[in-house]
Structure formats: structure tokens, C-alpha cells
Image 1: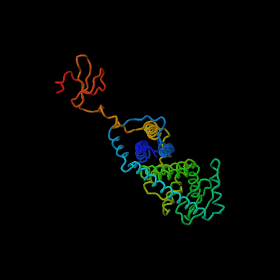
Image 2: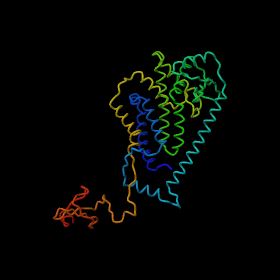
Image 3: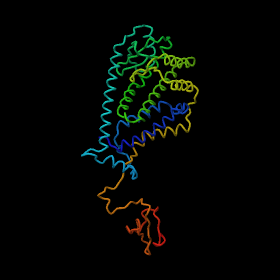
Image 4: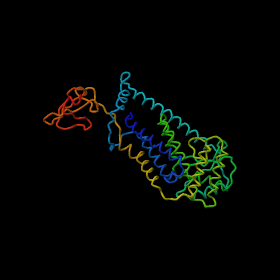
Length: 374
């Protein structure tokens, strides 16, 4: 089964990283200084690491002797023959993950069948615009252009045989260029693979609220990345037309599309405003990175890549069989009594424990006579 300590370590570091990312995504200037491509790479790396909850061979174990060992002991203690609380929790986790994986597999198959049944668009003008946009990419693949009456907004779907799905929303030829640029941008950046990774991650960590937060942040980063990619290819006179198209399609869109589609989906007004402000600010921001952005980058890499592989917190405690005759070095009621030979006698709770010629712990007080202690 999954190693308990490793899951705890990953939960600690990933939670801290998600909270930092949440803070970063609140400030547009910080996002622009860090570069959303870097943030997306960090978040995908975090997802991959959490999907492999095994201890790194270079991890340095840090013993934790307070609270953690007692909690671990309670969880590890059998409540019935051969069954512990940890075992029950792992079983619940496994069953929940299997159910969620079955659900998302069914959802994927359902949307795949639905798109294959959509009407193919044979309009020469639309196909010519799509091919023109597609030629801007290296190693272009063949996209199938279809129309859906059930869909709410244009979207792209499919890994090996990609479809671009249009709806009955009335758009201009220029809008079509923006739509194709946006959807092809998702495909060529590998966003559809990341969507699958996100959904598997959420299915596995169905119990972790930070996993859902991370999923939402990755989705935001994917949209922002594609927006910037589209803007880089536009003339200055067109840089404000694309956000206007985005706003139009998002407002006209109806219900949210399925989780597997990358689209001009309808978003909350705050998120849509954020994307538009980021696009406008991106045209004016300097390419220079601030000291703060460098520090945040280092912290992000540390929390996501370095710490979970280098640091491992482990519960530490003395087995009961070995506890007889031992003592707790953290006991506050300890002191040394120095005799005339320069030897140190250790007393615990007023009782003699041992004699040593060196001080084992500098925090333990030293007295010359017993009456001084009294």
C-alpha cells in the first residue's frame, strides 16, 4: 500500500505550494513577472510528483518526536484483528479513486462519441481560414471541423484525431481566426494531455481540497498561456480585438462544456476580467524580472521539486520493548551534579540516572551541590 509518511510529506509541501500559488494568482503583476509558462510547468511537476507517492532515494529523514508519533501509533494500532485505522483509510481512498476513475472514463467515452457524431463542416471559407491558421504551427496535424447544436462555445477535443467544434454562435471571419488560433494553441501546447492528467489527479486525490484548488489554478494558467500565445502573433491593431472576441463568446455561451474540452468556456466575470487585464498588461510590462519574482521562483521550485524529494518527516519513538531503563532527554526535570573529580552525575526527577565525563545536552542545568538545586 501507499507509504503513510510519504503521503503526509507530500500533503504538507503541496499544500504550502498551492497556497503560495493562490496568492500569486491574485496579483496580475506577479503572474506576468514569473511567466505563466513557468508556473504551469511547476504545477504539472507537482501533480506528477503527487501521483508517485514513494520516498525518494536521496531523501533525508527528519525524526519528529512530538505529537506525530502518537498520532501515527493510534492510526497504526489494530482496531480489529489485522486491521488498523490506516488500513481502513487506505481502503476508502482506493475505493473512492476507483469509482472516480470509472466516472471520468465514462465521461470521456461519452463526449468522444458525441463529437464523432457531430455534423462535419464543409464550408470552403471556414476550412481555408482553419488551414491558414494551422500552417503557422510547426508540424501541423489535420483537424476535423464539425458543428454541434448541443455545445455552447467553440472547443477542441482529441489527442490523435483532433476535432475543432463550432456552435451556432454568429461570428465574423476575424473571430474565426481567433477561435482557431486559440483552440489550436491548446492542442499544440499539449493542454489536452494536461487535462487528462488533471482529471486523473483529481480522481486519485478526491479527498484533498488542495487538489481541487490546484486543478483550478492549472486550468487558469492554461487559458492565460494560450491567450498570450495568440496575442504574440497579432499586429498592434488587433491586440484589442482578440479580448473583445473572447468577451463576446464567453457572454454568448450557455452552459459550461464538459471537462474534457478546451474551449472559450463561460467563466465567472472576475476570472474573465482577470484574463483580459492580463492580456492588456502583458503588452506594456517590461521583460525584466524583479528580485521578488526570482525569490518566488526559487520558493516554488523548492516546495514542488526539491523539498518533497530531499526532506522526509518520519514519526520517531522508542519501542516499548526497548523503553525499560531508558529516559527522555527532553525531560525538563533533569540536572547534572558535578562532583569533585569533574564528573557529571545526571539526575532525573530527583533520581540518579548515570555518570558521564561529558555534558550530553547543554540545555540541562549543572549544579555543584544538591542543596543548590533545592
